[in-house]
Image (cartoon, rainbow, N blue to C red; front, side, top):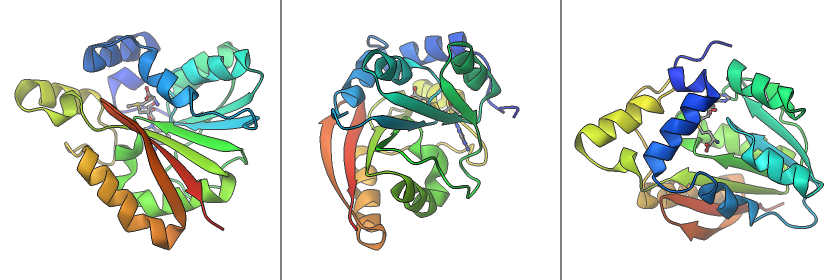
Length: 201
Ligand SMILES: C[S@@+](CC[C@H](N)C(=O)[O-])C[C@H]1O[C@@H](n2cnc3c(N)ncnc32)[C@H](O)[C@@H]1O
């Protein structure tokens, strides 16, 4: 599947851009998410994974990891490193593989018109969902930095400058939580907000 954004075609370029956008050690935001994994999380599903940092962590801690991404290049890189990476467009209403915990980092903004559907599908496949979403980085600033950040991380079909802020992410979760049936707690807020979502029966 050809990606419209050049940074999703080359992992090295993606890493450079993410380092620039976050301006902090590359592993830091992944650590906040990996810390949320429990001993009982044997099977981890990561949506829109791009890089294999979480996958590596899971391998080192004897957990099974499956990743889904639409980028040819990212899936090929992960497979070359013997990870179970699958190529799929998450905008399609396909069922997701069963897992103990599902992770999505830096990607929710790409599904803003389809959030309820996506959440229902994640609920159907997992016991917990760990979400990490940028709420305070260059995409939230003004001027040239914002234009650059938005342009570099855009994907179809929403090539517009929409990104979450702390407030809009919380409002979005609040608006969906009763219909979909979940509780959530914010476990960390810095450039990204990390949220643990627990599905209710
Ligand atoms: C901004 S990157 C975030 C990557 C990584 N999770 C991180 O936080 O560094 C967005 C990722 O979403 C993937 N993606 C975008 N739209 C997608 C879709 N419709 N289905 C599956 N993956 C998608 C891109 O290929 C890219 O890897």
